[in-house]
Amino acid sequence: MPQLTTPSTSKTVAESRSKRSGILIGGTLVVLVASGISMQVWRAQATQAAEQKADGAADSAGTDAQNTAFARVNAEPISYEALAKECVERHGKEVLENMISRTIIQQACAERGIVVSEAEVTQQVIEISKKFGLAVDQYYKLLEAERALSPVQYHRDIIWPMLALRKLAGKEVTITREMLQHAYEDNYGPRVKARMIVCDKQRRAQEVWDKAKANPDDFDALARDFSVETNSRALGGVIPPIRKNTGAHENLRRAAFEMKEPGEISGILQVGPNQFAILKFEGLTEPIDHDLKDVQAQLHADLTEREVQKMVGETFESLQKSARVDNFLTGESRGSVEKASAVREASLESTVTK
Image 1 (cartoon, rainbow, N blue to C red):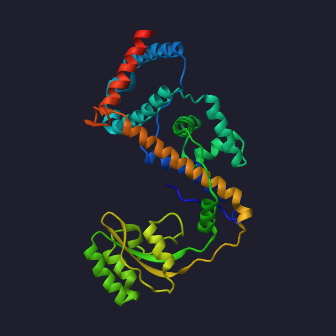
Image 2 (image 1 turned 90 degrees about the horizontal axis):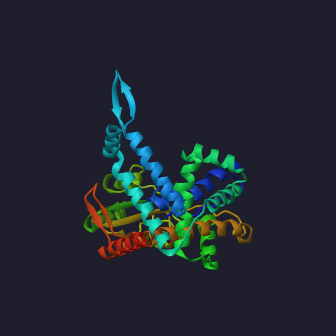
């Protein structure tokens, strides 16, 4: 889940654009990848006649491709078949999983009569580029420079799946006053500066806590010796400042804001299965002086994007759980047998009535 961020007025336009890029592009990618839906292949829905024509052309092109040498070394050709086999061995699992994800979404759209047109995709890109204050062609250049995404990739891999899943979710995002207040506190209020040790066993956490409590000045050394969280361990337990409402585990946030004196050691906090954290309080960051009314529009936009990403992820997770998938490349199967039978029967019925 991407953390909510709002650029301060002291930042440059370039920095603001870069940060918003992280929200609108990177955040979307995070949600899609986390949901198993990083699309590599997409085609717009078309009429039956167009599909049949395309299928015929594809068959012809496929036959030609298989008879074509893709390279020649001292008169010895490297065939399509050899190239395809190498590609499958190296990247087949990832590409196939992406195609499975695409098919899950396409089937759900077909079942519910949902269509995402190319015009809708284009309009969405126009709206996003306006938020950057850029023309569409300039926005595409930004995407290629910052994310190595071509316009075609951006349309099929990011925008189309997002629009399709929004429609499949079938609901609008609601931003409440409480959510705005929490976002304001997180972005402009004080944050807790702390060090942290994470242990994978409660008994070990108790041993480390006893040592930290007895000698708080040794906390950084204890973090390097005992913490299983590799990033903070290398820094002697230093972690990014903790926000009040989002980001860190709830137990961590609550304990962090309850501590008052620098050097104070928290209790042992369970932050996950077999994860036990200990904090050392090192003070608060300075709050940023902004009136809520002045930043409310930006906070609302950022919250909306965050909630949309959350909704999209939940929608796709639900689709995944209800789909029957047999991956013959990996030998793995998941999902409902009943779902597979229903889809197969619907497909057969459709074929008979054509």
